[in-house]
Length: 211
Image 1 (cartoon, rainbow, N blue to C red):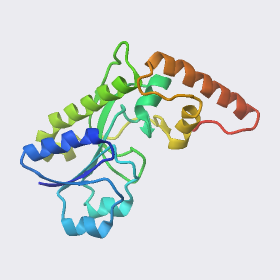
Image 2 (image 1 turned 180 degrees about the vertical axis):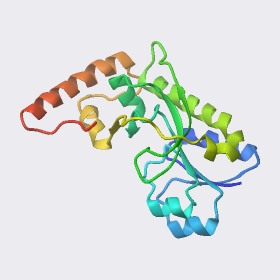
Image 3 (image 1 turned 30 degrees about the horizontal axis):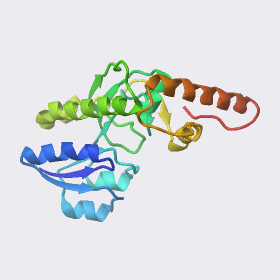
Image 4 (image 1 turned 120 degrees about the vertical axis):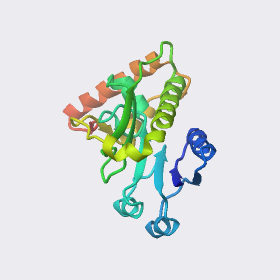
C-alpha cells in the first residue's frame, strides 16, 4: 500500500519505518495538507499519530475517508490535546485507541482500544512513553487485520471528555520550571491546586476550564 503518515513527534517515525519493513510505501508529512495533493498521490491509507492539525473534511474526502488516528487515551475520554496529562490529573480510564478520523475531535469510529494500567513511580516523561509504546504495539497487532477494519469499527458510547490546548496553558504557566521528569504525584498535586483556583475564579466571574 501507499500510506500517508502524518506526525509531529519523532516517536511516530518508528511506527512508519515498521510499515516500510512490511513492504509498504510511506510518505511522511508534518505540515498542513492540500486536498488536491492528496488526490493526486492516490494514497491507499492515511495514518495520523501526534499530528497537531485538525484534519479538515476536504482532506478526509480526498483520502476517501480511509484515514486513522492513534490517540493516547481510552476514547471517548481525553479527546483533544495532552491526553496523558489530563488522564493523570482527572483519573479517567487510561489507555490507547485507534480510530477512524471524522469531522469531529477524536470522535471517529474506534477500530481497537486497550486499557493501560499506570506504572508506579512514573514521571510525566515515562507515563507518556508507556502510552506511546502501547499505542504502537496495538497498531502493529491490528494492522495485519486491515481488510477487516471496516467490520471492526464501532462508535464510542458516552460523551467522554475533551480539552483544548489553552486549557492546559493555564496549568503550564503555573509551573516555574516545567520538567518532563517531574514525578506524576507532584504534577497531580500542583495542577490540582491550579484547577481549584480556576474554579474559584469562575465563581467570581472569570474563565475556567472546558470539559
